[in-house]
Length: 175
Ligand code: 5GP
Ligand code: MG
Image (cartoon, rainbow, N blue to C red; front, side, top):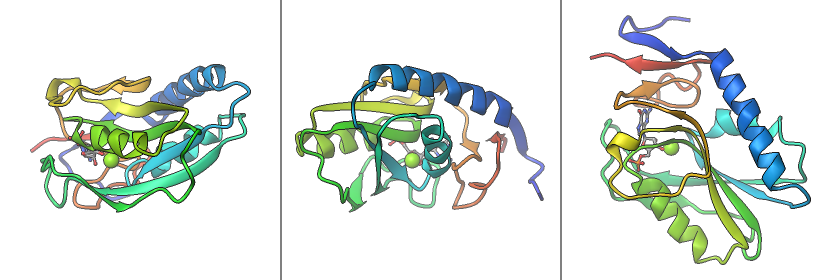
């Protein structure tokens, strides 16, 4: 694979796999006997979702939402809207949001408000990575893979201008 010289490996595929094993154990323990609805945030969470649910021996259902956030830059505009909402009824379901990264918190807090209005039985958040140093809106995170410093990361679903989503590891972008 042709990589840019400024890409530096940051979280390897093995570390990702170990973190997913741990998250899956936590989720299985908490949702035993339930039928959770996992809601992934497109596009970034697709790879994490695919690996996570293969470790979840639960009677789960999947849905995805598409939100507008970053646009073509690295900075969140802070303005979020729903481009594609959930198709599955959410009322009285145990909903688990699956995200690639929580940065300022605007995207996830908007999504939680949107889902809360649909009256789920419970609503929790699972994120592969968390960048707490940039948080502007406090958000509860129930399952966290990695806490990352204030660096822009790509790979494993995360993009820069739609590139690098296919990389199996997570890289930092050095300017
Ligand atoms: P927030 O609304 O929390 O500021 O941003 C959430 C969204 O911004 C993420 O779902 C992701 O699309 C994007 N984002 C934030 N930080 C990064 C990063 O380090 N790398 C990439 N590729 N996207 C990021
Ligand atoms: Mg995202």
